Structure formats: C-alpha cells, structure tokens
Length: 472
Image 1: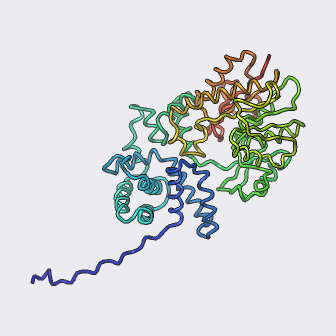
Image 2: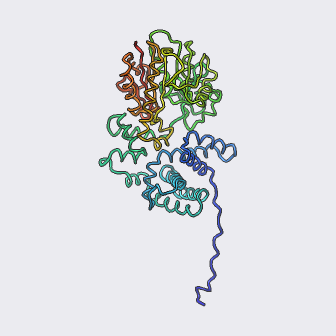
Image 3: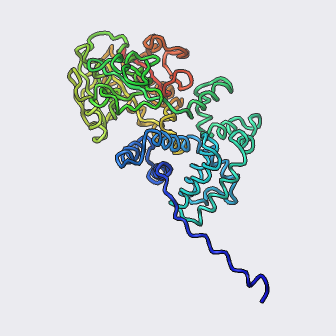
C-alpha cells in the first residue's frame, strides 16, 4: 500500500444551508414580478415593503436599500446587460430570466452602489443559493467575479461604442436607454450632445416625492411642517419630500386632503385653470381622469370659483380611484365611467376641458424605469388613433370661447405636436393659446405656444401641454 493511500482523507466540509437575506430576497421578488407579470415596480414594491415591515424584518434603512436595489437595477438594465453579456459565454437570451435577475442585482451592487466588492459578490451568490440552487449559484459567482474586475467607467469604455462612431448607440449603452428612445428624445429636445446627455442622466436619477396640497382642504404651509419637506419649484401647491420622506406618514395625505403628484402634472392643471375664457366659467371636464390626481386638483380649483367638475374615466376600476381622490372635495363634482371618444354628454357642454391622453409614458422614465424596456416604436401607432380621437371629442365637447388642454406624459413628437397639428387641420374653428404666460416663473419653456417640460431643466416629468380655444 502506498504512502498516499494510507493518508486519512480530510473530512468533507459540512453542508451549510444558504441564509436568506430579507432585503435581497425582497428585491429579487420585485424584479421577478416586473419580469413575469409586466408589473410596475412602483406598484409592486410598496406592498412588499409594507408586509416586510409588518413582519418585523425591515427597518427604514432596509427599505431604502431594497428600493435602491430594485430601481437602480431597472434603470441601469441596458448597461448591465451589456456588461454581463461580456462576462458570459452564451447569448443573454439563453440565460434563464431568474438567473439574469440575480446577476443584474449583483452587478448593480458592484457597479452602482458603495457596497464593498466582497459583500456585493457574496450576498448575490447567497441569494442565488436560496432562489436558484447551489449549482447555478456557482455560475453567478463566476460571472460576478469577472464583473468585479472593472468599475462602471471601465466597463463602459469596454462595452459602449465610441461616440464619434455611433452617437445614439453610445448614449444608449452609457445611459441605459433603448436606442430608439434615445433617438426620439433627441429629436424632441433638439440641440447637441450636452442636452441629451443631461436628459438621459436625469431619467436615471431617483426623483423626489412631490406632494400637492389640494386647495380648500390643505395648504402648502401645512405640508411644509413635515420633516424633510421643502417648497416646490413652480407650483404654489407643491411640496417636495427630501431624504426619502414617506408620503404615507403625512396626515394630510392619509386623509386625502393632499396627494402625491408630480409638479409637471400640477402645472398642466394650473395652466388650464388660468387660461382666459370668453363667456361663463361654470362647467369643467376632465375627459381622461384616471387615476385622479389632476381631477382632484382641478375639482378644488373649480370649487373655488363656484364651478362644477365632471371627471370621466373609461375603465371602471380607475373611475373608482378618481372618486377616491375627489372624495371630500369642497365643491360639486361628478365621476362617471365613460368612453371619452364616445361621450354621453352633448357637444358644446363645457367651458374648460382637459384630456391627459394615454401614451407611451416616455416622460416618466424616472418613476417607471421598466417602461423604457417594454415600449416599442410600434406602440406609437397603437396610441395614435386614440390620442387623436380624444382630442377631437374634447374640441367638440367645449363651447365656443371655451378652452381645451391636450396633455400627455411623453415628449415624443408623434404624441405631442403631431397629434395637435393633425387634429387642428380638421378643426379650423380653433386657435392655439400661448401657454407660457400661464406658468409664471417657469423658465425655458421654448418658443411656444405649446409647452414641453423636461426632467433635467424643470425637475418634473416630461409633460406636454397645448391649450386650444374653440373660436366658432
């Protein structure tokens, strides 16, 4: 018997069960919901966080980290996909989606946070052991160790084409937007490289929570007494919560006297309410009212003038959200479920009409980062007939001398100026109103008469507004 065969074998290491990290596990659950059910993170994440807090698993720091992991991973998905693709020996489409979600979470920890390299890799591998099994955890470990060899700037230099060779593809990789979205936003924005870089970078920043004090029910001064609250930039009813302020902790929000509403949406409602009219000002319509933020503000503004608001929403469950938002309004209002392209009201009924039409949502990519990966250029063709139909009906619904506001949370020219131009060709009895003077103090509103807001310029979603007066 040889010397080697007589040596006792080292005992095998005892198997260690994987330890479930509640923060990473919750982030993974949220990403799977986004992938599998086409859910939106801003709808999926809050109930998951609430459940974790109720179980005692989470404190405020845990919730903040989980939120950053989910939103950061979704915002940077395009960049991280390019990095991961450079570290695996197969096309990404052949990597199982749950494995890719774990890899993306780990890559974000390595390249997008201050988590130390060892902790980022080990926590991702432990998560893989819990949700994927030990075999695939080894694959995750090998890939992330390759990712850890460079920082984000180093990887971008490797995976992004040079700007001079292909500007749009370079920006798409660097700023994690689909190429067609980069092209569309650049066309809408105009100008050179600096502006589009600033816009794309703003889309990847975590937006502050903005509240609206509903007139007659709450004031901005009341909301400013909250911790980490600062005034809005442009709207007199806006208050921003900094440092991760929680709107659910604000009494006025819990009571419905205030709400969460981007300042761009507030400005749209305020501009319509301030537009000059010829004749009476008693009947207002919100023709696409769901989920109710603008309707609640318009209803309060209408009540202050003795006017009545009709809020119409096609989907019954969204009409229910509108009714909830308007509950307690100081003046008269009505909420109905109706198709805005085939309305039950008579033509020429209203003095002011708002149609915030369904769209691609490219103006709210800060809040819904996953939307950039779901939308396709052909979606524009799907929305186009509805947008034009809603604007035509709105113009027919307003009386002569009344005003229509056409709004959308997209800066894409096909959803903004093209829609307005096409419909107004069919309605020579209308004229555009210059909306810029109706937004006092708001800078850089362009040449008019319509208005396009921008995240990197105004700190708002990229809301578009055209005001149209019926003249005959």
